[in-house]
Amino acid sequence: MRSTAIILGLCLALAADASQLQYIKRNARLCDDNDDFCMNGTISYRANPRLIEVRGRVQRAPGPGLLQIRLLGANRQNHVRRALVDIRLRGRNSEIVRHQMIADAPDVYCWTFDSMTYRPDER
Image (cartoon, rainbow, N blue to C red; front, side):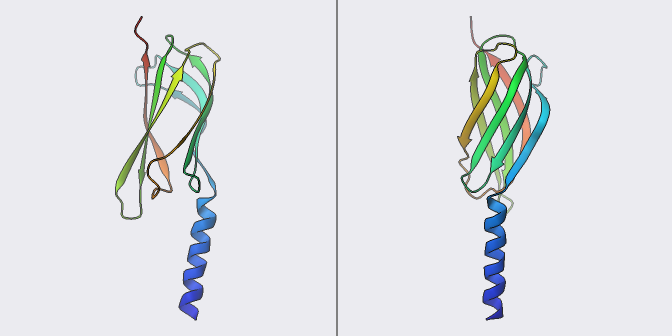
């Protein structure tokens, strides 16, 4: 009886934790490796629907292109998972960025920011 209560308590704690909003970056200045593209924004993750959301405003961009944000996560067995968030942008200053995607790794409850690149379109 007592072991059932402990297991039930752990399950409830995990379920409650899974519904919490996790901020990967919050109100941060995010720039690519070359410092050609910058935006002020927030990257968040909600584990229950596996939803990664990027919100922000472009500060500097060399023109239209593809923003790629790489996230790293680990499951309970410490297997590393990766998520790539691709966002197509017009590349205008003060452009609003709002993008959502479902992560492919359902066993990851916590993501961290790895890197970001901006690839301008060919002209």
